Image (tube, helix red, strand yellow):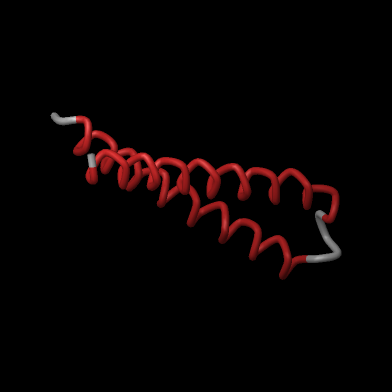
Length: 66
């Protein structure tokens, strides 16, 4: 498997994770004020997931244009 194919596979998995974290954050917002204590944790996990996804997409773009 090439580096590009491996990165694309990783991006697919990261995209699914980021989407799930987005839904977790959305669900939490709908349940407020219940579980308000978890806002920072869920928001940080969502942020981290999208940050990693964005970084990997940039790496893929760099590989494809190199």
